Length: 93
Image (cartoon, rainbow, N blue to C red; front, side, top):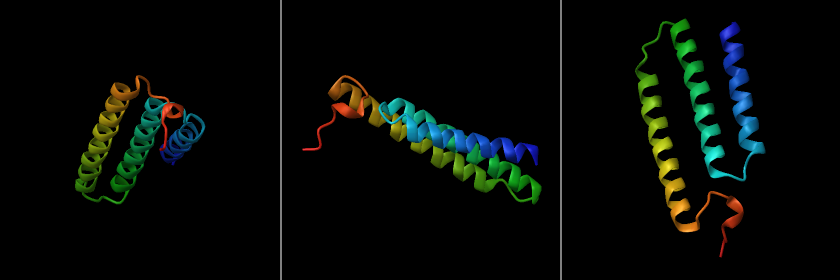
């Protein structure tokens, strides 16, 4: 029960960082990865408690790695075109 509480605190802290630090893309991506990591640990604890197969965790891990690679490619292209990762430097037009 203690581990579930710690993982839920991790999830809440990741969400708070995601909401409060929205100026830099790198910090937003790091907080998203932190949220995915906490969800992975929660799923691992839950599936081990009910004695379920861990194949779903492998699929979740593959999708989270793909999400991280896409975010990193967006970050690299943004730094190459604009010179920084500030959201304020974008023009919507």
